[in-house]
Length: 160
View 1 (cartoon, rainbow, N blue to C red):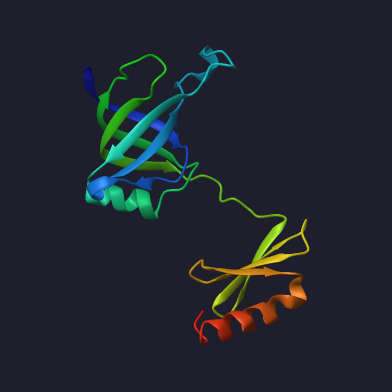
View 2: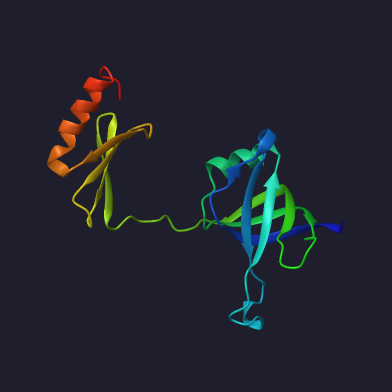
């Protein structure tokens, strides 16, 4: 198994996920420093990353979002087969830039006490959840949200 210590700059592909025994895993999309020398249709390099360092794990799970640009340093294990992702065990991490925060243009979330409703411009029906994410139901229209919440509270003894 070929390993080496290295630093990689890349974008977080998706929100990091907790792994076993206090670890975290995520994919980093790395591009060459001189992107002009690579063919336009060349695929990006995907580096699968993990860390068991509690400080790094905490930051990855609470402060890092998809699209953030990171510099990670650690031990790189080369892939066993061509086309597989390399694996990097992170010892140090630096946030170089943050990704854009996604903006919901056609959807709006609104709170009703301990409940949340999601309004979508393309749909008349309104999904309703508790503030903890439990499904309450689908209101036929915005005017029916209060009735749906009342029915849910009656069924659950007033608990959201």
